Length: 288
Image 1 (cartoon, rainbow, N blue to C red):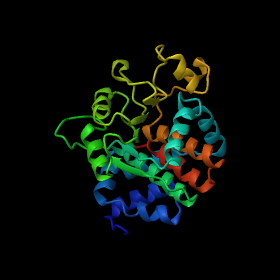
Image 2: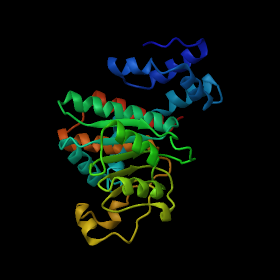
Image 3: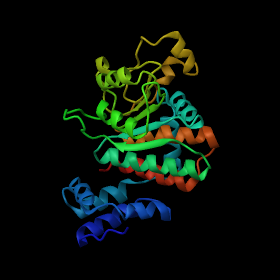
Image 4: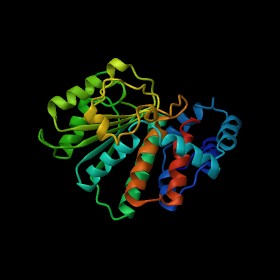
């Protein structure tokens, strides 16, 4: 459905569109974004079209060399390979996966990247069991990021039981959600987590073990990892596993790194047009 917009918002949408590579299917979703969302996005540029144009079109220098360097750096994010392999194991086994994204602009772009990922899995003939959902307050508590109530609602909708084994992938949230994780595990002891985030963690609020894998370039190295976990994580030298730290990376870029690595491990090189779309979406999150 094509959404008609007022002139100013239509011009803004055109600016954003010029900064992206989209196939016809993706473009259909792009032009269905509601007016309210475009207005909120434009407010990030002080409602100034010229500012938006300068930032979006002039800052998005995505040459092949820049992309290659960025991806080379991102591949050193701690746990990236290990997490991607775990994600692929759940996909191969057709076990349920919940991708829970934050409800801000960064989270919205994460949701779009997750949609592209699922589209590519279908194109490859993969039957996955993935549900993507925005984080939302379902329990009346002011919880930042995902909540037990959200997981419970999705679990009921999917017919999951206490014995079910499923994977929760967070995007742009979850790094300081140890209390919510404990609540989920109390009801669903076989659940596992991949936490993709970019926020600076409170180390007292981080669950980092064989149940909860952290993929966050701004997560400081912890000394309490067991020898078993260290072996599970490909015997990556401890100093190298934390080589990439970037406080300017967005939550969407971290999720994109995980999903791109997942596709590369499954199918080899990622289809160029898909890679362009995922990269533009993830980098756009730094501009909004």
